Amino acid sequence: MKGKFITFEGPDGAGKTTQMKMLGERLEAMGKKVVYSREPGGTRISEEIRKVLLNPSNIEMVDRTEALLYAAARAQHVEELIRPALEDSKFVLCDRFTDSTVAYQGFGRGIDMDLLNKLNSMATAGIVPDLTIILDIDPALGIRRISEKRVTDSGMEKDRIELEHINFHKKVRDGFLHLAVANPGRCKLVDAKQEMEALANEIYLLVKEVLDK
Ligand code: Z5A
Image (cartoon, rainbow, N blue to C red):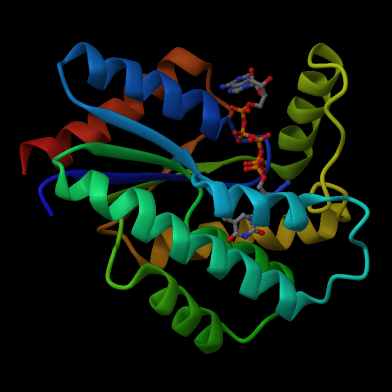
């Protein structure tokens, strides 16, 4: 692939969306063509699936349905948006990807890891990020940040996953920490407690290593 694929991962409220935008602006200022996306979502069909997944009324959703829907949204996203953009030499910056499935559905829900890895392979059909930034944060602080954002952004309600108990979010964080250790080449762990600008500089240096390769 001629482009570069960079994903942002971490617990809820770690600052992924903020950092993705800050990196994108920096890359655009360097003249790079940048595509911003998110999971679940990024295409019309995937955004429809997102609504089903995050709807707080869908309390009866079983874990297998959840895992399959994330994978279905991803398959559509990969073929319709990510692969064409990479073939067109663009930088694709994506808020969450396959590692979220391992952390949330694997570590959080306890679904068999081999099954999830197979599901991820099927959904991605060979697309692997060049770099994954894992923003590490204490889930309690992440949740506090999102609650504060909700006060500013009135009308934004808690989604189905945010409504999970804090113990679920702790397991998810452990999942991300495990992923960082298991994939030292692709995944880079950063401390998301830092002030935004300092964090953006640290992330940029990690991206620069990929650019210089
Ligand atoms: N999910 C899954 O289970 N399996 C999967 O395979 C995939 C996803 C792909 C998607 O929700 C949900 O789907 C997600 C995982 C699950 N769980 N939930 N809920 P989402 O993508 O819409 O939401 P999110 O990613 O969890 O959270 P978020 O609200 O988008 O948070 P964020 O992007 O990490 O943070 P932010 O919006 O950049 O910042 C949050 C607030 O903190 C905001 O007010 C900022 O101004 C502030 N902020 C950001 N950085 C800082 C720093 N450094 N200091 C202080 N304050 C900061």
